[in-house]
Each structure stands twice: as C-alpha cells, then as structure tokens.
Image (tube, rainbow, N blue to C red; front, side):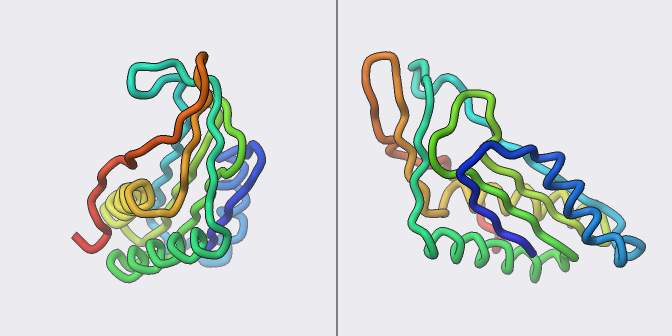
Length: 150
C-alpha cells in the first residue's frame, strides 16, 4: 500500500507504471487492476473556477487515507492499493487524485477502486478554496459517497 500527498503536478500513468514495476515479482498472482483519475473541472455550483487551493491537515489526512485503504484491502483481499492526491494550488484539467487497486479478480479491483474513491471524497480531511472570476470561496460540501464497509 502506498499513500502519497503531493504539492505538484503528477502524471497518473507514471505513478501506475512505477507501481507495476514494484509489483513485478508478484504479478503472476494479480489478475486485475483498476484505476481512477479525478481531475479539476473549470466549473462548480454554476460558476467558472480559475483555480483551487486544496488544504489538508498533515498527518491526519494521510492517516484517514490509510484507514480507507486498509478497510478496502481487508474487504476485497487486495494485493496493493495506491492513492496519490494533490494538495496546494491546482488548475483546471490537472489531475487531483489517483486511486488504483490490484487484486486476484476484476470484481474486487473494480468495486474496491470505486469504494475507496467514494469514501475518500466524502470523508478525507481536505478543504477546497476556489478562485473565481470575482473572488474566492470555500467549498462547503463534499460529495456524498458510499462506504467501503457497505
């Protein structure tokens, strides 16, 4: 399992390739992988968004992401989980989050990847401040998601 918070632009495919290389020795036991990449949109709540500053609480955020990944590993018997998440200044079209799972079977990979993302989106301690054409605002609501325990 690897949890990474980064304050710079990252390439999701590079992250996946690096993880695949690390998993090479046990690759014959892994039958499926699933990946989700979330990118910043240039709109929210009917307004055009120029950029976003994503804040987090160091230590607490990583700990919560580890809890989410550990729960998923147990429920779906995953071989590996990768979560890479941006913090700091982000611009439209840039990737914000990568969630990737590796398992023996496709259903486990698909289901766990989505569940991790939903849980992360709804419970991880991140705070978003959007820059609009006419000022800034804090995003008040995270998207509701379902739990990895469902």
